[in-house]
Figure 1: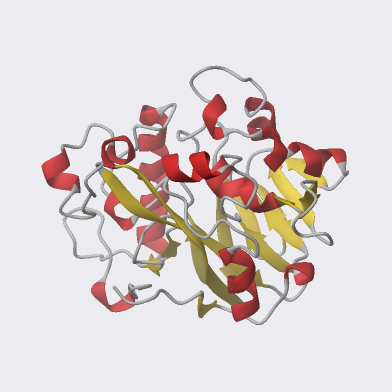
Figure 2: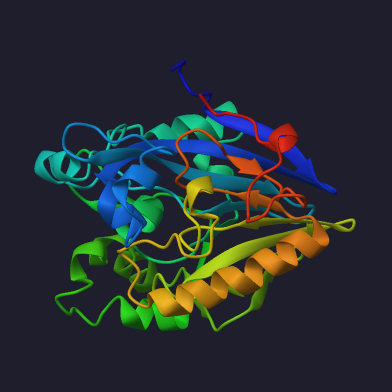
Length: 295
């Protein structure tokens, strides 16, 4: 496979969007596909000798008339070598792959006005902060306003055994302590053209991000459908804390996406950054003409 580009660019109406390579990870394929048998999911994304599949940590940079918005930000650079080995995290040093990708899109981290967290798992919000050369935790985007769902922030602090490995406080508490984290509730406009859409199930307060401009819509799916292989309704991650809720989130989202011909943006697909649904497919699948490969 060729080296993946750091940034892929296209437009959504008057918005210019950049799919950023925020690094990669490898997670257990069985966990990523839940009850789906391995002979089925492995046709889509082959596993390595440890049963892990490659996954992108794709982030989205959105140029709006009023703000430069970053949606999710990868795993950051704060974790140990052991942590990176367990989760197969690549490109987690300093500068991170995400910093390089932002520059490849023509910007610097200091240019980001708003950071949007779809949820607060370490592979989505780890880049909110970074560890400097002296070991201090600092905000990665010093000029930015950060936004997250209020319920997600509260859920991240429950510290129960089922979820606590995914929530690392140094990814979000320093942002709150700095007075830079704004907590929104449910569906909400973040800036004109960019809004939260509740898509619970992976976590109870998980949200996707809608981009709307000039009668066009894109949806950054985050973990409601992490890869294009997760488009079929029953293909749901074992990581989801409420899989039957995920099912209904997917059902509603896909119906609207098909009806309005949305561009779907995949955060974890190792090859496909985005695509539109094929209206002639028997079950949800992408049209071949609008699904570029990232590597």
